[in-house]
Length: 125
Image (cartoon, rainbow, N blue to C red):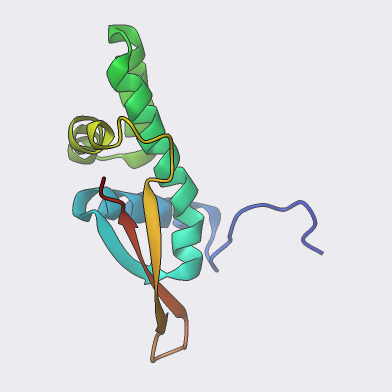
C-alpha cells in the first residue's frame, strides 16, 4: 500500500530522479516551456513554482537575504546561468502574481507507448 507516500518514483533511483528533476526545471526556465509526460510535469511543477517564489522573495529583500535565496536556488539547479535568468528575468515577470506560475496543456497520448503528453509552460501576464 502507498498510504502517505508522496512524490513520484518515475521508474528511477533517487539520484536519477534528482538529476531528471534538475534538468527538467532548468529546461523549463531556459525555454519557458517543455514537452514531457504528464507524470514528469506533475513531479516538477511544484518545485519549479517554489523556486520562482524563492526568487521573488530574494529580489525584494536585503543583500543577505538575496544572497541566501540565490544560494538555495543554485543548490537546487546547479547552473549559474539558469539561476541568473530566474532572478533577473522570470521572478520580476511574476512580481504581482501570488502563485500559479505554470500551465499544463494536454497533448494526448504518445505513439510509442501511449504515455499522456503535456506542455508545461510558464504563464504570461
